[in-house]
Image: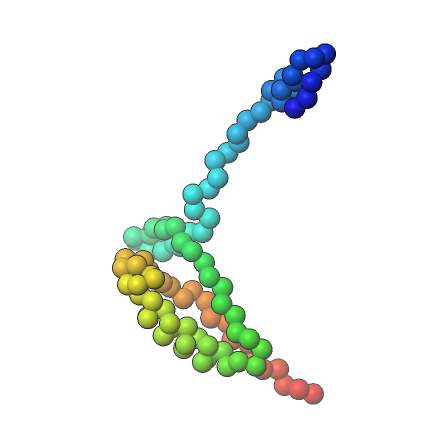
Length: 94
């Protein structure tokens, strides 16, 4: 850290140093309810459409692409769940 009177000064000489809490192993969890309730580590992807695109078509293409990726990029035994689809109705123009 520095030198004082010709001797090295270490951080431990002027402060308490600790490594802190370990980083989390899982940031996102997926849970199920009911008699066999459980939680599983998960990955969350948020997909949005471009302005002017048809949300129903985008959703349909996404489902097809997910099916194509099963057992290749998405390994066997890894589940994929679509947990929310939000389609805003078009506002009427005045």
